[in-house]
Image (cartoon, rainbow, N blue to C red; front, side, top):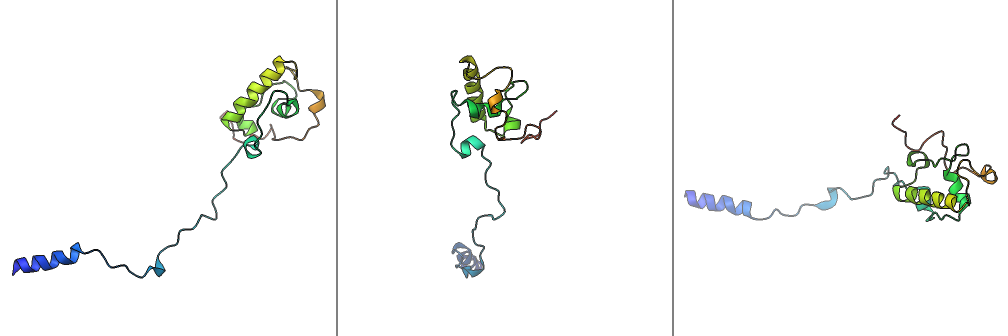
Amino acid sequence: VARQQLAASSRFYSQPPQPADTSDLPIDITNPYEKDPQQCILCKHDIAPHYKNVKLLSQFQSPYTGRIYGRHITGLCKRRQEQVEQAILRAQQCLLMPGYHKDLDFLADPKLFDPERPVRPHKY
C-alpha cells in the first residue's frame, strides 16, 4: 500500500505544471524614465578632429594660457580627447595654432562647453 501511495504522489510531482492564464503576467516594456546614453559632442555629430581644422581645435584650448582642457571639462570621450590633443599638438608644430594663447580670431566663437563649470567635477 505504501508503494502505491509513493508512486501516486511522485506521479503528481513529475508532471510539468499546467499553463495558467497568462493575462495577469507582467509585460516587458522599456523603461520610460531611463536616460539616453551620454555621448561626447564629437561622437554625437560624427566629427573626427583634424589638425587643419584650427577653428574646432581652438575650442578645446584655453584663451589665456593655451593649455588644452581636460576630459572632465570638455566632456569628450577618451578616444576623442586623445585625438583632439594629438591634433592640437600637430597643428602647433605645423604653426597653424599658437602655443601659448588662443588665436584672437577665434575668441568670439560660440562655446562648446563652459570651462568654469566642468561636465564632471574634479577631485580637487
